[in-house]
Length: 243
Image (cartoon, rainbow, N blue to C red):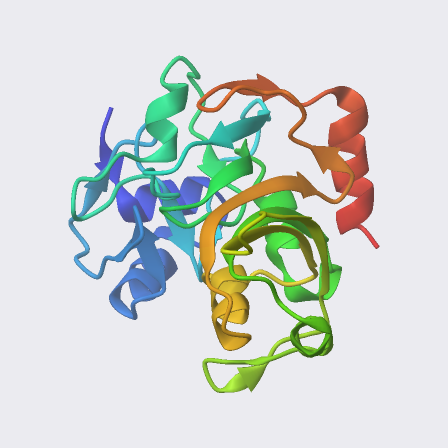
């Protein structure tokens, strides 16, 4: 059932309806990734994702859901998208609760993606100060030499700023040396950061997969499938984000 956006914000405890209207008008609220300033906007809480200051809005008392999805390539990590491309939530249609992704994986990247309706946990896991390691397996063009690897580890310039130190090691080199496979571990997750860092050392990514977030691993979860997190995994994430 649809309801007015300001009513939903008020019910979620963001502010009074009048104050929520001010936040909407000032551009601090997004619906499905798009800034909404029209006060008459209506949403469907079961289908639409609402963000306030880029953080998910969830009505308290809702049953908390924690899922791990093996995101395939060719899906966007948003609730809806202006170009009509498939979204990761299309893969979990049988989940009744309104959930949203924790962070993002770009359109061409596959791998581990967490989904939840726990807004506080999402905020903490995506906040830079919590330093959650993310592990990727990347197929790279060519083979980085020792100088390239050291440059990557120290941090490289991306979008006008130097990235934080990262880890990289070569796992396999193809016989003709046209490609290699590398394990990459980052402490931060800016937009397309792995790809941009690899571009910076002149060994672009041909294929990219996230295989772990902290100690949570993708394992043998099939591509396009998802599973509930175990209680132990949920507690690990909460402890990790409480540091």
